[in-house]
Length: 136
Image (cartoon, rainbow, N blue to C red; front, side, top):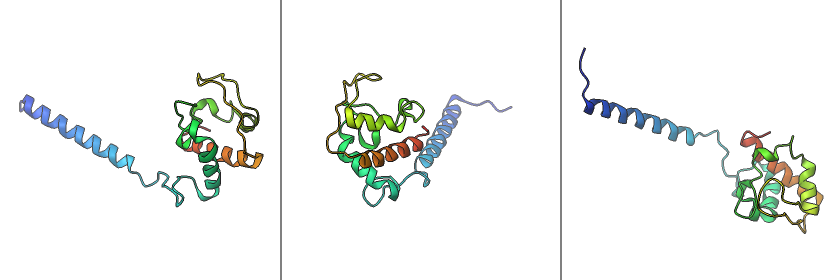
């Protein structure tokens, strides 16, 4: 049996760490991840109108790609999965506003200037984002 010095053990540990970090970096660059679309978003073509409407009416509070901000919660969150907050909840929120009940951001005001068709497209986009995050 050959004795292993501390220097050799440290060198092996650094090599394993480097290999692990390299594999992690390769996974992070996986080509199967959504790529930005021509319009600058990541949504498929059939959802880009909803993405644009979300960006225009919702992202100031709910963040880019519905990740949340200091003003509003993330919609890509288990709380907003379809079984807990169905699509109708998004329609009601836009039309009437919502009293704060899951988060401490305060009440959500109704959203002026969005039609039911707009909310439908926005909801489809949000549901797609949720599916991308493993929420469905």
